[in-house]
Image (cartoon, rainbow, N blue to C red; front, side, top):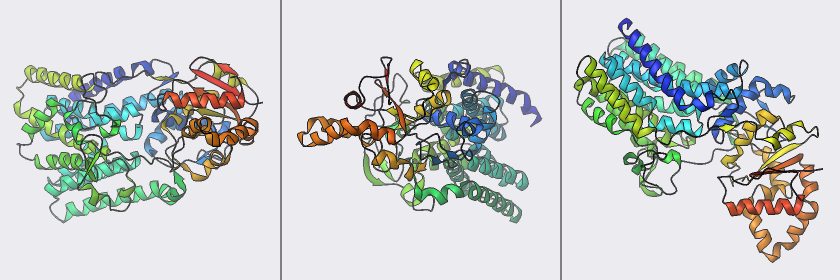
Length: 558
């Protein structure tokens, strides 16, 4: 591997430069704006801040007691991305949590590309082939979608190529080295997220079905690697498993739509629309150059295990029943059998197994490139051309403006107001299973600046009891179920209910600990008519706004 040191360092530098460019605006904002701040990125920034310092500011019993959310009931934080949260919390003690968060987003790109580079080098001993393979994996539609959604844990997919590398070493007569790599890959996957652990296990099993360990020594080390990963999983996720029956949140389910295999990424200007398909239904585009090279690579010796990895990930990502566009066809698929296994039934996003498919395709692309590329500078020129083609397929339209943290003058005024009480951010919706609408994440980002407790929140999971106030308090119930507000005004039979809300609503909100209510008029989640209904109810019950900044209006309860 000594010969690989210089080209590996150069590849990491190129990957880092790309990652910096993709997140340049947030990196250069000096901790004032967040990547995916309107989505799950807000949750990670909040958790870094909370565990680093926030819990002390709020006088919580410990960092696992989220007293700043669902005020005054609070909730308990459960592990969802242990490795990212641990590293992010440590960094947040040295820098703003927002800066720590964007650095980890960039690191997710670089580590994924670097790990795939090492696997590709092991397969080909070709620096250009390894560079292409790492680039393709780093900029897979899966990785870019997870980054865009703010799913920091799922963005760290480096464990998959490391685990596959371990299988290759185990079957090549290097049992101890293979076991170390396999164990390292599985342990890192377990510590990253349950989804990455599942994806890495699928990759290892698929590769192992084609390239099986030979000899007692290899099997012994393989069993030890799996045992270590299983013990780590039990230690890390047993608190979540024990508390799961009393938790709510994360009820949506997403399988990959088959049409996404032939459709450019959703954000690409040339992408074909797929009505009603959510981002995680659309992670199937693998890249023309990558697929062409993978087809060539699939004909090379030793490619069978990698092809099995790619095929297993792609087929299982389709979920239990075939979805062609945005509606299920009802045709059963292999995932229906896998879903019956213990714990796997709680994996609500089969589409994330595209991480496994992307890893298999990237590794096959390395074999294909090594087979067709000329030596020397012409080989590097071809590598750069393939990388440019892949970037042109994946990156146009991907970057979004990072979300400012402070929220503007109205939020600064709330931060300076000495009166106790929580902030209720609207519009917001509570679903039938106790899940909150995704726009309940952005308020968590702003809380890191204004330090006022929130009436709601959207961590990955929350106690069912945390919603008791919202579900039992007059006016608060209507405001958190905006679909009910229109009928309040349209149905004469509900006139008495509306009158009661107008007379007793403010006192009811105050009894639930609410001091401020902020309405975002340009909210992208709810229909404009529903947001207008919410504002009408606020005006009729709380009067004129305390602060009105056009897109944001704030009411203050006495």
